[in-house]
Length: 116
Length: 114
View 1 (tube, rainbow over the protein chains, first blue to last red):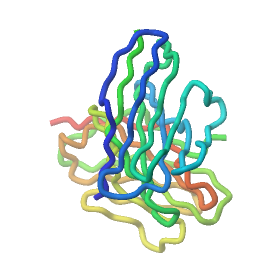
View 2: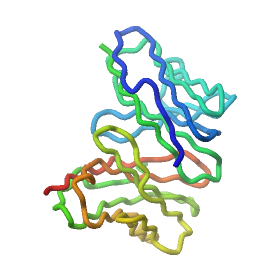
View 3: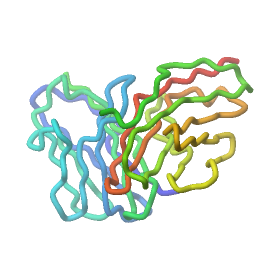
């Protein structure tokens, strides 16, 4: 099956700093990548959808200036949490879709962010 | 409005027994897809099974089967012959035709007892 990687798998940072999380499709080209946030024992909440070469589409309530998404190539999307605060501590998961006809999204292993 | 509802926060099942996880959905789109994912404590999302709204037969994948009742808008997951490794959180999700995004339910935590 298709493989999606995320880096780093976990990160601890100080409040006020920025953190970049990478999402890569390793063996396929992803036309669309999705970024989710998951708080402990809760569901996945979609933050934004990114298509290669265009601006990301953010879900209602997600601050686009705080969560910067860049989809520079068909195999890489990055999420930057700017000026992170403790309430941004969460599990961030990306997923990738090959094409519109593809039913399945392939998920990355997630990145656990802890902001002190 | 909630698109996917999973009413069971947690379930216990004896090893080797079957367990049914409930999922109901809400959509007015005639074309949609339903997914089940497993999330172990490591956090990775593992795709289990898919059911399309026009599929005539219930989907099956090994020990996983989906009890699709379209009129009731339910898509329950049945795990047969439970194993200790099945202990995890399980999410039901839906994709509508005009919206390629996935909507997830709240999840059900399954604990398999030896």
